[in-house]
Image 1 (cartoon, rainbow, N blue to C red):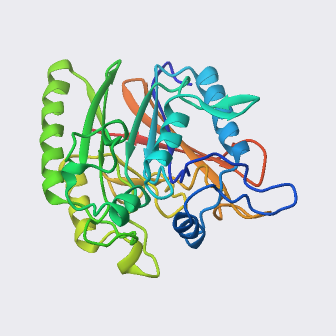
Image 2 (cartoon, rainbow, N blue to C red):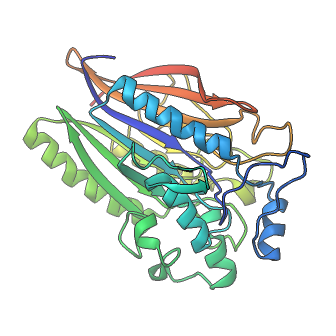
Length: 347
């Protein structure tokens, strides 16, 4: 690695934790039925969400620990781009956050979790994370939050759909920010995406303040936006699971105006890491696949299997470089590096 390896960002997405952790399937090949209320069990199966593969959770922990140990970044972060849960119930948030921020009891023989290795976790909600609030609690007033643990799940102030964090290592200022892209008018189960212009304006104010600090301290700003919905995704049912056209335009204008280098997304369970030199100077999308969701016997959770992205930011000879590695896991075994792309970061 180059001499000044400032930040390592583990990018996971669409974890879809249920309220309990299960092996994917029994030895006989029959599905393990979660102990959830019948309506939620039916909902999970109708959406193609299956119990977690405990081995995948363990392999992600192993890979996280090994990468941090071997590459020795100055700072390791975790970014989860939405859909931490299956239906947005409090018990599911507890499972997801315990795994991401601490240690989760696997069984009598041990525990799982990446919290001991990555101390800083940043998340945005996905459409699944709003389900329970929408269907069971009449979620309409944003001041009520997503759930009673809203403050520990979504970093922004209660009632806000955005957050902004400024982190410094060496001469690099990482401006990491997130926004809730779920369309509040889309109903309880629809996955449509929407970007609120008011939230973007407030986020822009925070960026301007961080830029003043960066200039005063002669720091090189790297700006990264985390959002659940993919601006580039074009699905079959546009009204259901895409981000709407007006929001795409707003997001593109925002990225150009505020020099957002990368947009980290998820949602469609299909990773996207474009080749360097693509036309967009700012706002390049780096999309993660589903990282820990289970699958039927002898099947993959998506066409790419389980996926996480590893983003590295480092200085070399006065310039700043961003590297993205795609790590994939097939039917069994460890996560392995599938591809790697390098991008030059400019002011």
